[in-house]
Length: 135
Image (tube, rainbow, N blue to C red):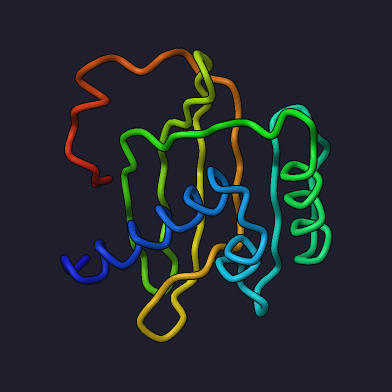
């Protein structure tokens, strides 16, 4: 993985969390691929399959009365060919989730095709301060 690839993948992951935190549906729409099977596993939801259904799920979350504030912690990227993977913690208030975001390479950037998030214990301080990477 080159430093440029790593930076581009982390930028795409940051864009996803910026769209989530800002409740920016237009940006959320832009980060999801149109050419791969798209799936999303929100905590406590049944699987959401297909780009339209996934984007509708985000619209519902953004439109809800308690759309959560979210922070991405300790993102760890990995790249295999044209597939990028970022594992990270999500902090929503005092609660923590562990997330997997899977991207496909499109030209010089990355687009999301799978997001999964599930409850997790609070990360240790050494995890929070660790360099973001997967071996």
